[in-house]
Structure formats: structure tokens, C-alpha cells
Length: 206
Ligand code: NKO
Image (cartoon, rainbow, N blue to C red):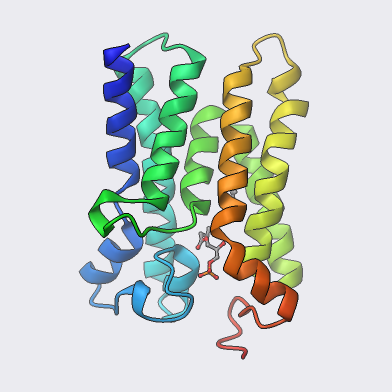
């Protein structure tokens, strides 16, 4: 149990690494917390116009979600599903409330994607495809994230959740992640309702 607690703490620290801030600093860009939505995330970094920086942010923030779970499975082979679910949640919460940014982090979309990759690659593919379809049609990153966050637990239940190897704890973790994701997007939701949310590639639409 102490070992599982250590893995959860480790996952939180890994999730806390803010790639939007790190990548921006390394590439000589402004701190993403100072412009646009002020969010340290791939979408906001894209508002600088630097697609490479945005892609690296997405990759880094997703990789840490995947890595935290991969590492836990490596260090504790046969870890109980509940333990793994807590590790997944810890990595995600680390991104939202990172110790390295005085607990003011991002919205967790990319990190959740990394968690999905570690849990079930096909689930990640289906959820990312959902994100992409909404993003292409509506041009709102936040809306795409919200729709994807809604469907990820649904896909899990209708996919592996109903199978013989079902791990209910992971399904619950995904649902909690989805709820937190909505909570972190509440300003975006207000802007979407008011019609003032900024579109992908559309510059600033006020
Ligand atoms: O700056 O407030 P903003 O407009 O930036 O940003 C809103 C945005 C914040 O998120 C990001 C990360 C963008 C990642 C894009 C690719 C994600 C594709 C897969 C989505 C997976 C969702 C997982 C849900 C699990 C429950 O939203």
C-alpha cells in the first residue's frame, strides 16, 4: 500500500511538469499564461502561431500521462486496477494543479489523451478522432475537448468496460477525469454560450 501511495505521488509529480511553459521557455516564446486564454496548454501555445511549439506541448503533456501509467506498471507489475486508476487520476490532477506552477495548471485534455493511450490505445484513437471531427467542423478546441471528454467514458463502457477483462476502477477514473475536464473548461463553456470563444486558426474573435 505504501508502494502504491509512492507511485501515486510520483504520477502526480510527472503530471505536474507543465510542457506549455517549458516548451515556450525553451523556444523563446512568451509564457502562455500571459496571453490568449492564459491557459498553459497546446491550444493556447498555438495562438502564438508557432505550430511546432504547440505540437511539442501536446506531445509532452500527453506523453507524461502515458509515462506515469507505464512506469507504475513497470515498477509494480500486476498493480491492482484501483491502484492504476489512482495513478491515472494523480497524473491528470498533477497537470491541473501542478506543484511547479503554484497549483495553477492546465485543463488536462492532452494529459487525459496520454492516460487513454496507456489504458487502451484504441480508446485513445476513438476519443482523439471524436476531438478531431468536432474541431474540424466547429473550429473550437474547447468544444472538441468537451465532446471528447463526454464520449471517452462512454466508449470505455461499451468497449472494454463490458468485456471479461473489464476494470470498473478505470472506467470510474475516466468519468472523474471527464467531470474535472468540464469543470476546468467552465470559462470556455461560458464563452461558447455567449459566442465569444476563439476559433482554431481564426486568430482572435472578440
Ligand atoms: O486555450 O482555453 P483554451 O482555448 O489545449 O484551450 C481549450 C482546450 C485546452 O486543451 C488543450 C489541449 C489540446 C489537445 C488537442 C488534442 C486532444 C485530442 C484528444 C482529446 C482527449 C480527451 C480525453 C478525455 C478523457 C476523459 O480544450
